Image 1 (cartoon, one colour):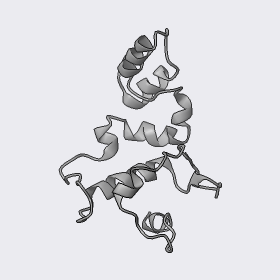
Image 2 (cartoon, helix red, strand yellow):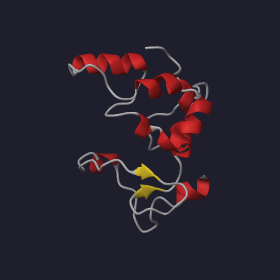
Image 3 (cartoon, helix red, strand yellow):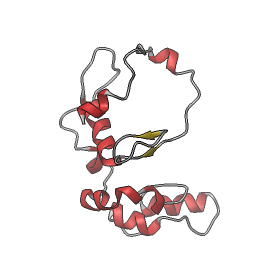
Image 4 (spheres, helix red, strand yellow):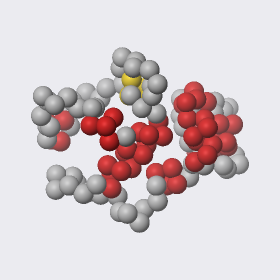
Length: 133
């Protein structure tokens, strides 16, 4: 994973301060494509990306505002996602949901807030988050 992470930033691009980056327009989300080099895709799997985010969040650096303490559980545990189910369904994780991802309770509350009968993905939410609606 270190090799993949190191290749994400071009060597000729200097790191820019956060105050400068704050003013940029957000880019659309990219899809994950671990097996094929797809233009405009993140070149590894979603579980690897989540692990990368978790590891980088735990790294201590003077230019970082904060750090995830070592005592904090891994990201999938913090999100209350069943690891085995997530790994088995990661390639279809987002396609199983509609416009939102969350626990069945959160999806039901969002449907109520949007004044609609349901949101697609409650079955996927039960499978991944392991909770009843």
